[in-house]
Image (cartoon, rainbow, N blue to C red):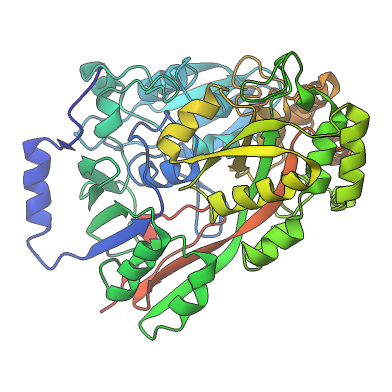
Length: 527
């Protein structure tokens, strides 16, 4: 179903908004490299998408200023049996249209999030059933003991059952198929901000929710969110005062922004690791001159690619030191990180060439690489550098860098042979990398983002055990084994952990969370 691409709230909501703006409203103008691709909170598991819609919709459990778990739509939770969690739901909460929030909404969202079109299956994949105790209490039954369930629920946002049914949006927007519905352009959450107007890729505006159940620590009444893909244009908009906050500041412009007396840059480590994935399932690559064979099925080829990439050179010249090379798909800040596996394979073109010869590709081969150009810091330039590195071992990379609006539908449908992706462990636990990225693609969101279909039965077995193990010594031993197996297989090629660079006017106070979330309810604009 195609809908008009500019939607507004109901007249009553607009009238209420007008009243709230009668007195000195505080407007915050944010310029970002990209845009949320949909207002549907189950349509795309991507950081920018979730940080934007996360100001409109809310989870049962969220993270506070210190990134620790804190109640949201659930007031408390406890494990009442090895596979049962009781969540008490917050009373007197209303969706933006006035509909009360109840247990029925949670159960509806569970079914919606595990639907075929959902990109959020990994957040509910460990759940077997949700039972309604009463309007404000539920029991979540897991498929096995799963001690980190509350952490997982921080990324699962809750919609109104009634609103979805009324607006024919009971199924999530499927980005792979280009399907849209009312939830693509309109929103009805419980969060601190309401969507007022949506113009995809142009401009979206949000207003403070006057009936919000919680406390809004900041003073922002209106947020104008504008995607500005060009780095120079985005920086110029901040320098000229056209926008108040920009994300990200290109690494090459950090000093310039810092040097402006009216501006500042907020920097910090991000939980995201950027890596390369390779198709390891098909008998023949989709976009390659190699016919009848798939070079990436050979570990020697994957290792050759790894050792031909000069990640230190990339981080020095492209990232200007704003990234840290890694040997795993998780950074040191994530629970389960194993320092004993923290040493990368050495950059060595001669070794890489020898591996290519041994694998039967002495002259290399040609393959297409998919890369976003509006998601990470210098993403396209990183891919260009990788392509230049690989040319030294005879590999010709046909780089296809594109906006995430076309990039994600392509790679999520596995229409790729070689790609770049970044991943934030939203639970701050290794399981949220093992399960969606390193596990074999399967049911309930397992391996949903393992887009090259890497598969190791032992890793799958260990991942399942790690999810339910409560003895930390045993758990860490299994984590070590799983990470080492994946590392030895060269299941993916880790590149680096990126740093956050946000630019803003000096009179703005905000909270920079390591998952690259920007909660607007914490933002204060000083006189």
